[in-house]
Image (cartoon, rainbow, N blue to C red; front, side, top):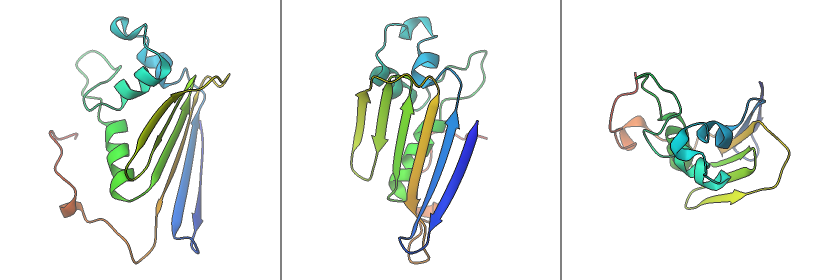
Length: 134
């Protein structure tokens, strides 16, 4: 795994990038028998749905990507994920899923959001989650 970040004070943005050289989100989603025939876009859409998880054995999972999506949208940011043969970009008012022909087997996540003193999002302005995570 590799991660890095860069603050751009003049632009008022912070960018964070994480690269994981595992099997990738679509391939992980496809390990579940009911998802084995999914395309990359279908697998990514499935992974972003609250409550969906590839973890088994009663472990409470399945909120991470959905929470990340909501965080980015609330903070007027942008999220891009390249994973296996899939791509998703999430911005203020749009979510785009695409199948991409790549040979990258892992996952690259790039997050950019506003990071300046004139803008912030209070926890009291974020809708409550359906269930507690911790």
